[in-house]
Length: 559
Image (cartoon, rainbow, N blue to C red; front, top):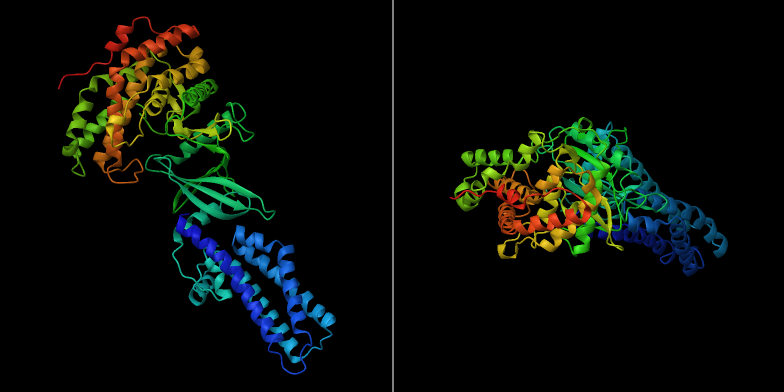
């Protein structure tokens, strides 16, 4: 929900109480201040009793808390209940304390209040009835005569009874709220906020309030079916992975909620919801955490290495056949390059000529892209169940201890090589700039951060890696940085069909950042080999026997 909607919601909450109270006040003023002959002898006392009754019951039933926190149909029902009880107490109490006969004025006031309450009650139940799909005629009638959007629980739908008809477009929020209400959640929706991080799925923070006044938070995601066409396989993987890791994977700051986000099923027990608006899933929300795009300290990156290393170790007992491949060739860098060449030939948006320099840079390294893929296909490297998207921002850190709490974004958990995971972490974490930095002079590979992450990662999972995996580890960051540069460049030329962008040309900025980072890694490759060899020696791991042969594997052709 954007800031405009949030501000309007707060405005409607106060209007609900203001106009409802104003209507009652007008009744009291007419009845007791402009009284005819024979009316009550104590108008001021009568007015005080009226305020005490209605305000008192609203406080007792927590009406003000409900309205200010929620402002929904449920809050409106609280207003009705409080006013019904207040009216029932007010009439006999004012007559007894003020010794007033049931004059025409008192009768008028009582009837007016009861009719007002009856109208509000009738509206409330008509509104609830109209929300049921089988009552389409009633829903259309209320839309026509009250200008109310029946599909919404928005405050504007409640104010037509209290003299404040409001017209506004709430269809995006309506759609989301209808989706949310089909999941097994607690309480009524009070807030929907889009979270802008993440390139693939659209993600929203959902806040609800239960009848007991407790706030609950959930994460709603619209699955990108262009990226994940087989949603059944995706969700089967997701549920298998979360069930396997829940209670097993523990990180330094893991809470009782666990180190992964668990699925919240739909009301009919399904893992996800599929309807005309798309495919949706609901996840648990982990509070008191934050994420980072780049490390804020070397220690942070060290613990990130430990987190992803432990993830690999805890998934080591999962068989490859237990996890489906939802995106074939996801980390096949050679295949990604072939896709780029096909898109260049098609050039659907006429952008290829403007990125000739970037294309030439990529083509000069075409012989390097199969260094990991070839070893996997030949069986030199083992296939393992990996995260496959080990960006730093897929780790949640505790706001107090600044230690890892959970690992998120498990859509790409598939059979692969941990070299891709390691390289992806280095690609994003050692970059001294953001991933869409326009000033390329800020882009470089921080070797101090590289060593910190590598130490944490190898401390956790180095013992399960083979000699061949350790030998190729120095090239992992170069391969995956190449791959991401290729993917961003491909998407830019293809018209931005894969990654979410927030401004025109963002994918090109991302591609240039990755390719610049790759160039810096190439210059620093001998030092990278030296860092890893030193760590292997300290941890008792055997991987690099000939430093020159590792460097020689990354050959750049002359243009």
